Every structure is written in structure tokens, then in C-alpha cells.
Amino acid sequence: LKKNRSPLIFSTQLPSRRSFGAETLLIYDQFLESSPAVAKWIAGFPHKYGVTSGEDLKSVESFPAHIRKIMSVGESLSSRQMIIVVLGGGSVGDFGSFVASIFKRGVRLVQIPSTWLAAIDSAHGGKTALNVGGVKNQIGTFYPAEKIYLVKNLLLSQPNIRAQDAFSEIYKVALLQGGAFWQSFAKGGRPDGAILWKFLKPAIAAKYKVVDRDPLEKTGHRHLLNFGHSLGHVLESLHQLPHGTAINYGLEFALVWSQTKKFLKPAMAKKIFSAPASQYLLSPGGAGLLNSSNAAKMKSLLEGDKKKVSSQKMRFIFCRAPGKCFIQEVTFSEILAEVSRQSSIAHD
Ligand SMILES: NC(=O)c1ccc[n+]([C@@H]2O[C@H](COP(=O)([O-])OP(=O)(O)OC[C@H]3O[C@@H](n4cnc5c(N)ncnc54)[C@H](O)[C@@H]3O)[C@@H](O)[C@H]2O)c1
Image 1 (cartoon, helix red, strand yellow):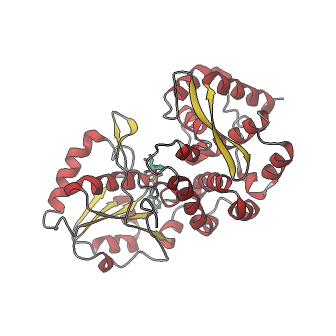
Image 2: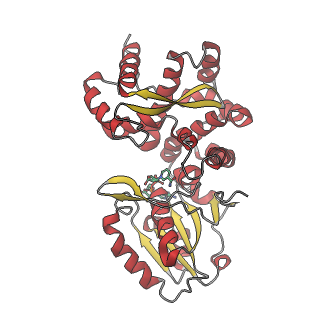
Image 3: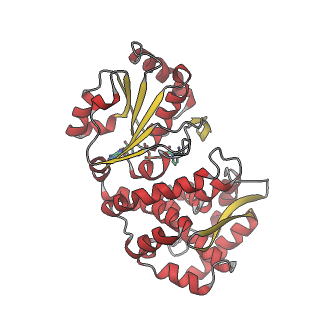
């Protein structure tokens, strides 16, 4: 296995607590105690620290208070043997893995993602993160977990609306990867838990395929994972949409723009858009989200995007075909012109 890859363990139930040994500290999302089975599993850990998930947890301003409490919970644990097990969604994963990466100069880390977003995406690739002054992911480390458990019963216990939201992450990586993964997903991909579980393994493998070529985000290749995210993030802020829903709109926008630019030829576009999985893509123009009265606000949100390369330009991901997506620099004015174009065709 490559150094940045974490071994994956697919299981039906949560792993036995004893498998981690005595020197274990559990950092977990307290919300999960609402399930009696998970609450019982958590109760079995003598050293544990429950948190409230969300962006506030990742705030650097509240970090000193957390780390003091974690130190007192983990006081009797030996730093050499110690394992931090992190159970929760992406916010708890970003926070808990950051703690593991700096606690006693770095201790062993195991992740058990409890949301689809964390299971498909955020638990993999080793990025940890804290927010500074409300700005996301400004501080962090690269610290891959030594194991990641993908637990079917835990993930399927989420409400179906979560699967709808996570659908776009799988659609994105299937299109980036192309080949057999895309073929099989395109035929039957639906936004429900059973399908997400079925495609979880190839989806993670597809993410690692990109990460492996740019593990420390040095070459820019890892930006491919932002497919659908440039406009997605703008719509997320502008219309207060759930992240996955916003990315879904962003993917459709990127595919249509790829057609406008003639990267995506008509026959291939027809193949992609007529695939059963593509019927779950959402059209931002059709939903009236590309309102030109928001142009100034959109421009300022684009300017704040981390994919920005200069005061006028950012990296955008286009698609020629499944497995043939690529990064190209575009100006903010070009994006806004395409926003206006897609808005007007939706209203024709
Ligand atoms: N490190 C990375 O590479 C990376 C990549 C993408 C996103 N992220 C980060 O991930 C975070 C978003 O992830 P998220 O949506 O998982 O966030 P989250 O941890 O805030 O979880 C979202 C909600 O789901 C609840 N939840 C957790 N497990 C559940 C379960 N089994 N059933 C029902 N509800 C459950 C949580 O209590 C919370 O209310 C953001 O902070 C984002 O920046 C990190």
C-alpha cells in the first residue's frame, strides 16, 4: 500500500473495542449516542471524549479548551502505544485526526466514518483541518489513519436524505474514474443507501487514484476532486444548500459548460446525460439558481475560492468523457458569462 493510503476494513458491525487494545482514546460525535447499540459500544471505552459535530468543533479558537480536556481524559495512556479512534462525520474526523496528528507529537489514528460524506470522501486522503475566524480548513496536517473501518449498519442507519446528498460525491468520482466503475454506476446509480454501500469501495479507490498522484497537493492534480465544486460552493453559500445538493448542481453546470466549450462532444454528452444515474443530476438553471441579479455576490464568492490562481482566474474542471476530466484555468468573467447563458437557456 502507498503511504498515504489507509487500509480499509469493510464490516457489518462496529469493531470489537478490545481489537484496539487498552491504550485507546475514543473521540466521538455525541449525536451517535441516540442509537442504543452505538451508545452501548461507546460506553465500553474507559477513555473517551464526546463532541458536538459541526464547523464550531473545527474552530481554532475553541481548540485549546478541547485539547486540555482530551489531555486529562488521556492522562494515563502511554504516548507510544496510544491510539485515537475517531467515530463521526467529516467534522469530527477533521478535528479528531488533527488532534491525533499533534497530540504527543502524533499518536496512532483509526477512523470510523459515520456519514456517507466521511465514508466516501473526507476520511480518506489524510487531510486534517481546523477553521480560523470562520474560514474553513485554514490549519491542518496530512495524517492518514492507520485503519479506516467502513461499517455497513452505522452508515445505513442514516436517513435517506443523507444518501441523496452524498450521491453527487459518488457520481463525481465515477465520472473522474470512467471505465468499469462509471459503466456500472451509470446503469444503476440511485441516491439511496444500498447503492452508496454497493459503490463505496470503487468510489474510495477512485479517490485514492487521484490522491496518489498528488498526496500533498503539490502538483495540482488533486484539484480534479473539486469537479463540480467551483459553482457548487457558490450555490451552497448563496442559497444555503446542503453541500451534496450544491455539488450536484455544480456537476451539471460543469458538464453543460464542457458541452458549450465543445470539450464534451454531442454523442458523448448524450451518452452521459441519458445514463440512468444522470437523471438524478440537478440543473441549477432549471431550478432558477443562476439568477443574474446575484452576479456580484457570485463573483465575490468565486474570488474567495481556494482554487483561485490569480485575482482574475481560477481552476475549473471540465470533462471530455468519463475518465477524461481535466483542469483548465478560466476567468471569473467567463464563469459568470456561462452562468448567464445557462440561466437564459433554462428560461427559453
Ligand atoms: N478532510 C477532508 O478531506 C474533507 C473532505 C470533505 C469534507 N470535509 C469536511 O467534512 C465536514 C462535513 O462532513 P459531514 O457532513 O460528515 O459533517 P458532520 O460531521 O458535521 O456530520 C453532519 C451531521 O451528521 C450527523 N451524523 C453523524 N453520523 C450520523 C449517522 N450515522 N446518522 C445520522 N446522522 C449522523 C452529525 O451529528 C451532524 O449533525 C466539513 O467540515 C468538511 O470541511 C473534509
